[in-house]
Length: 389
Image (cartoon, rainbow, N blue to C red; front, side, top):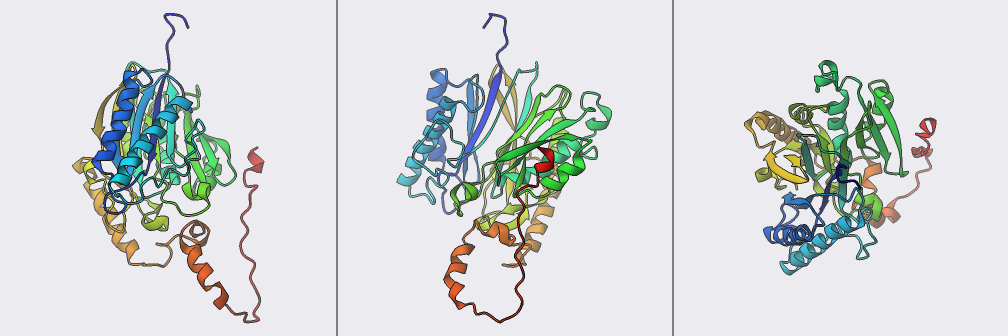
């Protein structure tokens, strides 16, 4: 590398549920402290440029910057070490569900598939590099589908798509099929109808990355790990994280945040089995107490300079979001009054990965044949993307 060559900065956000104080509602400060110590030692050794440790609900969040690129084994190993050390403390304190998101003791160079959620991006820093880290609790990765669409494809949300020539050419969306393990790329605005046909099913098709169409520059990344699909049974919520670059060729901070002004319904909440509103809150209100919810999202704003994390700004901790939160609480009341009935409870395809199958197993021998015509169960097509291959 020549002396004048620029080095890319990598932002890695890796989270895990390693145990909670009194149920599933909040991380204990001692676990944050031990994870912070692990990352501080790594920074002193030069592995990390900077870091910030926080929590949203019962999820421990590691926000890290470095020069090693995405999916680096040492960075992932560092995160795994931080989670294991925090889990040890959680077990000593008798916290609930200690180590819940650590599905294996065997780290093999990457935490993907082992439980933690991961959102990473690599880029050359602009003179001013503002980013927003979104962290959600009690919901699934597809909860970010609608906001990502609004941010990067909806001119009614993002005025810059119309009036800013740097955004006018649009963006590309990488959509990941979590059932089949494959992805398809859509161009916006010309292919938004095709894209909406898929991402409107957020339990399966997830907006994984967004890139600027004109130069393929990374704009946003979302974690796509689905714990129930990895483990084959209910082992907790997926609780996604996302990183979005803003300003100067990307949507403005206000446009990015505006996508969360409507508290849309997402899957998750109690036992990962219910629909509820995604409520934007500041860190001080990121505690999941009502029916283990309702689902929350926090937005932390940073400026990245030479890998340093300047900030954060707690962006949803503002009275401007009070009406959104009020609406979310009204929706919470409305949905809760459905009790165990759909649409509050998830549909049968999603309930297959919750605790419901244990109930069905218990009563399966009590069903009797009536002699009436049987209806064929709906089939899930696995070739939905074949025409895009």
